[in-house]
Image (cartoon, rainbow, N blue to C red; front, side, top):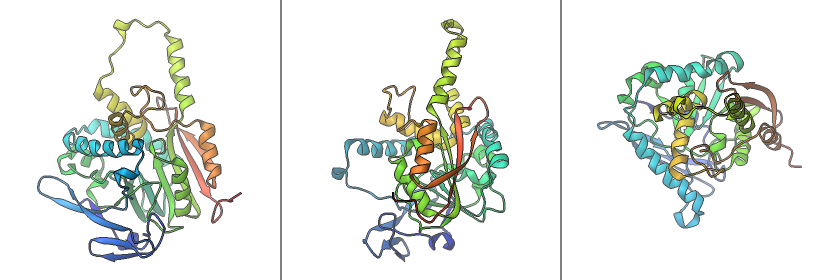
Length: 336
């Protein structure tokens, strides 16, 4: 068993759209205010076993979606097929490298404890770094099949023993969180903000779901830092010998993505690449929905009520990745 939904988590749930109360039957939550239904769906874990996940995503009819949103949905379907096909890729060393690249973030710089909501949390790998002081962990992700194939990934389970324990998991969008106001001590967003459909709404929702005095931790690539590093490397060797340059292999790019942005960043890249999403017109160079500057990230915190308390840049070679912490100082942001 990899997926669960504890009673404690159920008590925090609300309608992701109108925030109304929910009525539960064995296989569906129904909003008592707007009437939307959120069913449990069968997720295949392997060829013989399956589990159920409650789907709190809001599903618009295709004819009510703009073309870009339709492409995003099609990309999600492509990703789910891709994930199932490639679940046999299972490198123990790559997992260890991923863990080591962010160890300082969670063991030295930030102390996540209490109730933790992991937005875009995938299979819940953040649990590897959470101590006993984190008494509740919930992962949400729009990709409902992220647990498929896990029994066939022994190296993954060896590197992340926490994955062998059931994870509180719900399929949901960051822009429409299905949790009551003031539910969590920590909101965690690693390598997902620049892939959201609406980062502003996602930050507003995170603020709403945070307790007063609660915190948000965002891990994000900063575009000017990355460009400066690339420019420095180019100036150091302005006319490289093409025959002397190593050819970046697909596995190599995968490893770099894992180390720099973790598994969620890697998976989002797959989605964006399938959809051809790029705000610079070059899918090979940029596979994000948005590119944040340091100033725009700070502005996003301010506009959504968060008080930024600490910034920490990831160690080289990923020094363009910032981990920024904000605190909820008051019940609601100032509407003015």
